Length: 113
Length: 114
Image 1 (cartoon, rainbow over the protein chains, first blue to last red):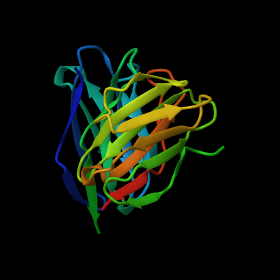
Image 2 (image 1 turned 180 degrees about the vertical axis):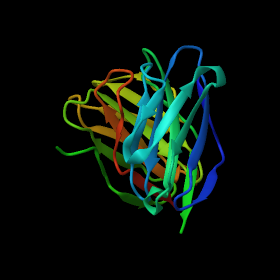
Image 3 (image 1 turned 90 degrees about the horizontal axis):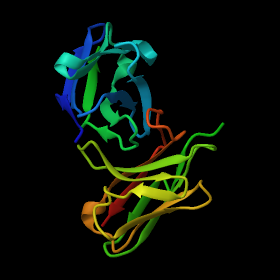
Image 4 (image 1 turned 135 degrees about the horizontal axis):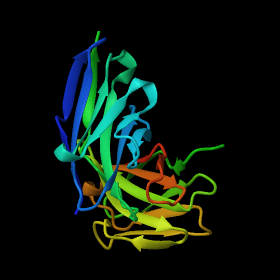
């Protein structure tokens, strides 16, 4: 069975500081991994996805994530936080040949001025 | 091109009443998904459609929940005899239908059962 664990339901950073949102997954087969962002009162939108090509994946708005098989991790980073990055972030996993996507519980990012 | 739309955006109902939530996917997307997002929770998978068929109904929480999709397009999620614990945001997403494809989400329907 697949599962996703996001460490930290809330993360607070100062504007300009590094953003690090943690995600660990479990999957019995090579996974597809996703990060989605949800702004207040909106649906989710894709930030980036890993589909077994390059292990370092670059997404929109300056975010990137690195797939580390040995650590079963897919942490999301951004070098310098902006106020507009304040939102909820969801890590998700699906498997080859499957359509069911499992989402983590989400991490709410706060950015302080 | 229009994105995924959902209606109504907000629904307040009384316990015991039935509700219908509608999802219009992106044109050409064969896969359609329903999720439930409760306060402070992640996304709970409810059901997925490939065309008009639903190969995976494993996430429906009880037999009060049902969903259908007609013409490979619009989908309706029906909750019968609503309970207060059904209060949540119901999100719909669609994708091109291949497993690694990005899901495009609608804005959700916020359901409140009094």
